[in-house]
Image 1: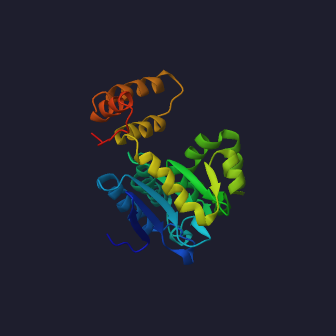
Image 2: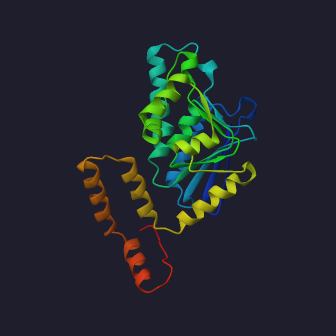
Image 3: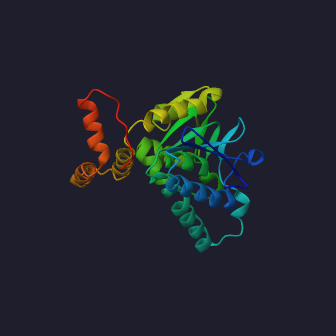
Length: 259
């Protein structure tokens, strides 16, 4: 499928999605949001795709926020509609994808860009990456899940400080806070993420999907444990569990089929 604002390639069953507006530092606008929604649908539905990477074009920016020029004429109901549609069509859809979607953050991840990275299952950052939620500088707050996902990752106190100051933090700070899993040289970024995903591809696809589902439904009360127990039980209906257990007992590598 051809896109106006995205570049896509499939390599070793991984779809690499590159947001391609380098002259705008890959800022999100209505077209990018619509096309991200479509390409994530492709991740869900294309059996040739086992995982995806989201990154930005050029050496400077992953996504440096939203296109602010689109905000000037919005009234409150239109602003709410903008956030709801974006959340439902892109950010929540990424977070709940049954296949791993990883953010390869190659520069600025600010505002909606930070929210986009946080909606992915995990983040690997280049050494020049910068993260921040600077919406308060515009009289706004995050609208694509930033106040919710950031708290889950860094805790209430750090999230409050980042959200209220709008400050930008380095890749090193992001790793210290738990936002980024690791930091690599920019030229090694994509290959590093691809290598991690190749390891994940060797695991049972239905089990990976259930891991994602359980983690996304984290609850420190009994409800969270009960959800995990239910999903654990569902694994016993899969051919992959029988194959994985048999392969272990037979001291061979499993051949998972996703059934």
